[in-house]
Length: 233
Image (tube, rainbow, N blue to C red; front, top):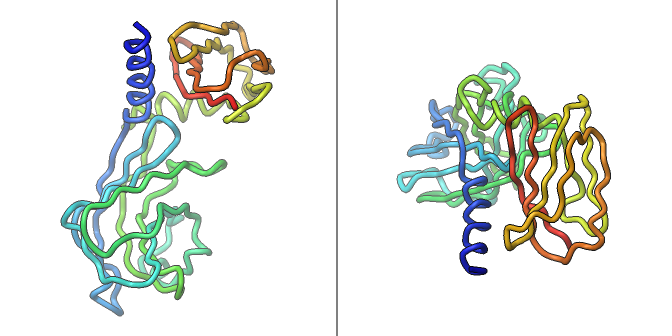
């Protein structure tokens, strides 16, 4: 029975992480100075339900090798191709996926930084950080709540309530900036509910009596629900 519950618990986490929206990046070949730097092959960006983004480079991905070539997601802010080519990555609103290999299938997942609006990011940018050298970029259709169920659930509803810290030790805080009425349930690794409270707007929950380990927190708002992992140290 315990094995079954553990399997269910981690399956639920997996399903929460892997439900997603995906956009293909197109229109590479923007390096007009060094043609070998231009990217070819399949490149896509996936928005996950756990506030992370995944960059997928296909098995046919290829570009010139170089020291410290990194991939970024960039908000172009309406800049022209010429302006993007001449921009330092530090002068563009961005977050980094990581250092890439010059060819072959690769996957990178990174958390969306606090304060970044994922609906504004429209460019996959490759850049040699060591030498501040432009490599190539391609475009994606920005994620939005009309086309992406992840955003219709999280961006418009659940981004209005935050939980911190995570990992936690003695207390977790729920801050509901727009005074939405939320219901909070916490389940342990066996699937047993260990906490329940309705009508949460701004609350501190004492978890000092909980054993260290992994828990699930289920948040219900306006008939919609989100389940996320909580680590207690």
